[in-house]
Length: 383
Image (cartoon, rainbow, N blue to C red; front, side, top):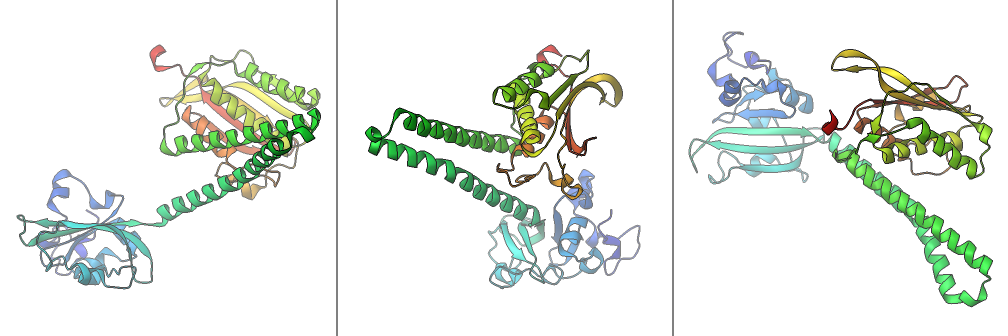
């Protein structure tokens, strides 16, 4: 056991630490090493002396097990509440009410002001009896703070992105209602087309938020159907050409034969739409799309032609090397040409929900190159 028990004061033998400093019996009985626990674990005996101080507790508190074991709990773990009061004196687990069973999780401060999440369980030999063990768990707050910052940034981004189209919709509709007779049919059409485009923008943003929620919670559903990925790319190219892009700006190369691909066609369209839009908006020159069969690993064995890869590249300035590792994070923007910065985060979530991978790099023409690979897999009822 690597909780430092053999280093406790009074230890007689490194291989046989005294019973008072052994890890809690329940953990030992289950064959669990306290150092394997993801949270910090500190256990004090009936006299308030620390008998277990695991590796996570050492990492969170920056106190070694050697220094903590055998010490009084209030000395080994000198916690204060957010008002500066000493926590163990305030709660008095050993001399306080005997009906208490513990302390709920709350933010407390370590020396130096570092914040941790602490909860405690009072173990008694009988109800209302004396305290036999005090079990304390510790959690670092940094992950929670990152999540809170991310949520705050998401709310701010959404508020900013919604404000512009909603202001436009409100302004044009109010103007039309108040002065309908004063406008010509062409003016009315222009205003209504603007309202329609802004409504589409709001709808897309709401769809992105729903996708992010499902990705973050692991609830993104994939409804697999046969997908002709080459034809899907072709449809997107035709849409760009119909919207005014030059046909010779796109080069589609499809390797034949391709393995049968089962995927969610709507979500694959979402991935293709985002990658092609990025290439057209932020890139330059020819946008090249390569669709190829590729090998993958299945259950630890090499499987030839077991996946389909799609590579989208352009001839623009590309993505700076220092930004490569942030491309698929929330709010990353390759330029200041608009967008929420959520698209590539969603793309990565969709690809991974299919069991695939996506990478970014530099194209042969010095532009950006995105490559996603989807394993060939059928729905469960066909497996």
